[in-house]
Length: 79
Image 1 (tube, rainbow, N blue to C red):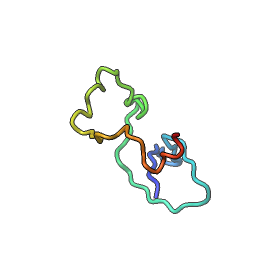
Image 2: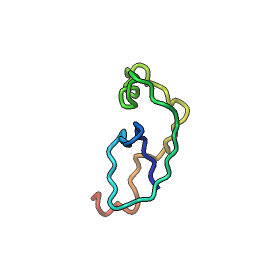
Image 3: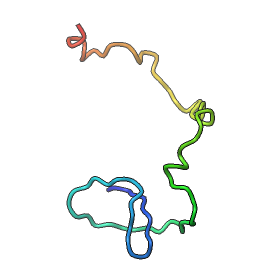
Image 4: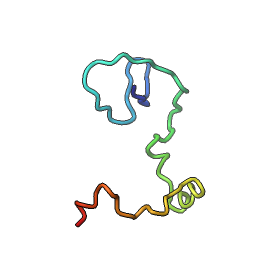
C-alpha cells in the first residue's frame, strides 16, 4: 500500500512527489481539502530556519549506552 499526496484539478491528478511504482494499481482517492491559490507548496512549507528546528525532538529520542560498542557478529570483519 502506498500513500501519495497529489493535486486534483477536476481532470488530472498531479503528485507532489515522484512516484516509482511499476505496473497497474487499484487506488482509493480521499479528498482532503481544497487548495487555495497562492498557497506555498508542502516542500516550501517544510523549509524552516535551523534555529526553529533545534531541540524540537528533545525528550523524544533515546540512544543505548552501548551504541558505539562493536557488534558481536561483526567482530571478524573489524579486525
